[in-house]
Image 1 (cartoon, rainbow, N blue to C red):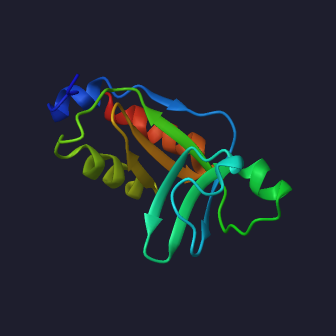
Image 2: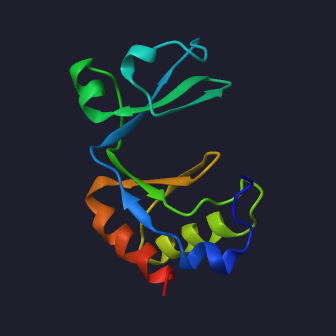
Length: 132
């Protein structure tokens, strides 16, 4: 279950999937992992400044939580190894050519890319080009 290491194979089997819904990044100073589980985060990261959560935009809006940008999530369907070299660089470079910012999170099975929601379809096109 180690995942794929071969960059060319990862690119040809990328299978990007646009996630339902929209997401925002928000932060909570002095919070720790596990706090704010009621916000239904799909990812979290403990930073020096506080706990960063990626949560559904609707939850942030309902709770009047601060956020700057609304994102769509794209899951790369390929099971890439967390030790694979180059996939994040290629994805970032491709999206950069389209002028799309990318927040990449590597999890155990897949990489996940968060792009500004208004550019999600452009990002899907850009990622699809990598498969060819």
